[in-house]
Image (cartoon, rainbow, N blue to C red; front, side):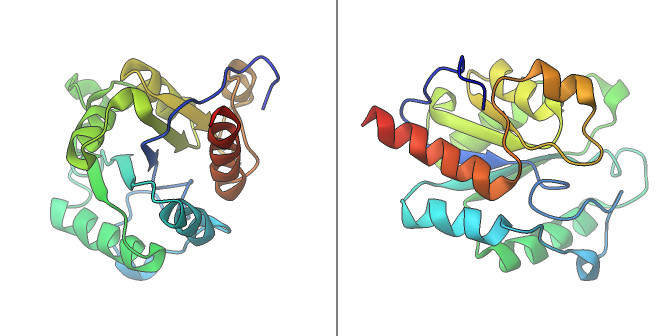
Length: 184
């Protein structure tokens, strides 16, 4: 993280992107058998659970709108990931294509706002952790904070544009918790 990033303050929930953040990114995955956790994902969720911080997932799933998979396919994949992660508080996804102009597709705030509502927390007290800038921009649009966890598909310009970055999801969670602890 860059030194100019402000402290997190109170964190009431952490929301994760699914593909490329918690699980390996298999494009338009409708097969629960292909779900593989990324290194540190289970530990990151367990750490938050131990601290009593609710968790959720906010995920664009345009494969539904493109006719490449069904909502049931996404629900089965989410259920498999949830089982591997030890159950998160909520799963919210956008089924629309980028051209649909919906309010939920990241980088718009809809998914973050809905996840916060379901978890009973203020969006301003959420942190969104994801692998592309749309995740961080959705957080900002909802009044939340974001952490970028770059991977092989993250564009260098996205990394350069963000103040809060971490090398992996577990480091991102530790950073959030350390910053919150420093404020206590």
